[in-house]
Amino acid sequence: MRMKWKQVLVVLTLIASLFIPATLFQATAKEVPAVTDYYLTNSVKVAVKSVLNEQIPEGTRIGAVVRLTNEGPRLTRVPDVEVRAKTEEGIEYKLVSSQANPVAIQPKETVELSYMIVVDRQDAFSLSELTWVDVDEYASPKTEKSILSIPVASLEWRGENAVISNPEAIKQWGETFTISALSTALEYKPVSFNEQNTPKGSQTILELLVDNKTDQKKKIPDFRMNVRSDTRVFNGQRLEKDPIVLEPAEKRYIHYVFPAGSKDALKSLMILTPESFSVDDKTQIDFAIGQLAIMLPADSSQWNKASAAPAYDWNKVIEFDPLNKVIPSQVGVSLVSLQLHEGVGGGFKAAVAKFKLQNRSDNPIALPQFQAQLIDKNGSKYMGVRQTTAVEALVPNISYVIYYTFVMPSTEKGDQLTMEMLDTTSVAPYNLAIAKFQTTIQADKAQDGVLNFYPFQVKVNSWKVEVYMGSMREALPYSYKLILDLDIQLQDGAVVDQSFPKMKAELVDAQGRVIGSKALSFTNENKLVTGSQTISLDSILFEFADTLRLYETVDTPFGQAERLIATIH
Image 1 (cartoon, rainbow, N blue to C red):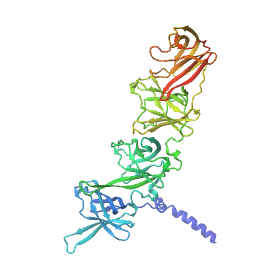
Image 2 (cartoon, rainbow, N blue to C red):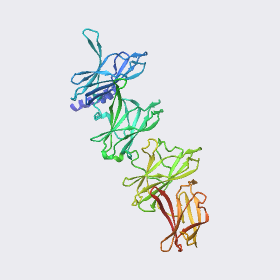
Image 3 (spheres, one colour):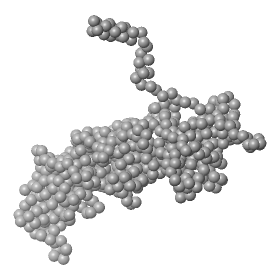
């Protein structure tokens, strides 16, 4: 019988639930706290923006910033009442109004007012609320009437070395957030945190993506950032100096630099809003209130937006960050060659990267001023040296080839490399990564006797040498005439300029001794061409040339470097 009654009760409960609104279940499952509005008058609404309780050498600095909104249709004076900070122990401190505080509020306008006092008190205490009190100084005895009290315990900030403990104000790396004390219209996301060596030492650059989520123009507000280790706080500096206004739905990056590096064991970032209090016309006290903490991953390799660089396919257009300011969307950039050259004097190698740039528009475009950096498998970084060029603009529908040299240790094999494309102008002298991919040194493979000097393909049909004796008074008494029959083809319709790498021809005798050599250009009046051509080489040796070696040569800051392409007997 008991079992039957239980079944009946279950059925009745299920039937009853069908008539109960779903919203009642939702409210029961998760109570949404109501937002409390506070008013000084019928038309003046009050909100507390920030509260400061900071130990300083003179004692304790107590400060508050409040926002007053005039919801009425007419100009309204700021109520002439005292603002007091009340401690948990019940002590009240009258706060002094900043001289810069406004005295009136326009209709529908929101203004900020700053208050402060320094108390000669060294012990730690906590603030519980702000109160607004109407004091009648002319009554006898003086009368006081409490108008409004607002709890502030959750807003209290204890200065630069304070930490944020509110879980809702602690964000993880890569997580989006808004700064509610400033504006909820803009959404922020940390995307990279890169250490760089500068003349000022090791510094770290933070890149934040800002997204205007509204259909109105929005100005990016001023806020400060610091980065923290277990023992130190490093203050950051925003690199963009001019005001930034975002169009509706526009995104862009902003950047901060910190005088810290990986050796400092960085743990978290802090976002702070700047505040000020004017004592008089000449004295202003600046302070900052912590708003959010961003925890850095323990693995610093996760601090970059492109930590896992994709593998690159040769001659494919590189995918740049769409928000970058260096490479226009109408310009395609491809890596077409990456080769290792040996330093002629020894002691180093030079990786030579050739990039093909194509203007895909109908109008000339200024030659993009990007930088490139190679990173080896151990994480060592090698900045490229850009080819000196007289070209200023890219002609429509023509490919232009430019090269970069990277001086590397002589032990480098080039089997595991990462190419990082950089913007060196937007926040100079600091660098911003705009593309990143994995690559490797290309193997030298001549197919059907065709030698690759990209964008030139060279085929040696035949060669011979004639030697002539000159005057014994000459420093180089023997003259060699190298007769080359070449077939030269240009790939991809690309163009190069006068500083492009050259082909060096070297004559070698049967004992392996170098008789003489000469660098030959693919440009200028005496450039290499298809067909037979005679090249003069002077030497102190009178020998029969047994071997012809062909190199590609480039100039580097450490001297000339060359890559042996072919040995022809």
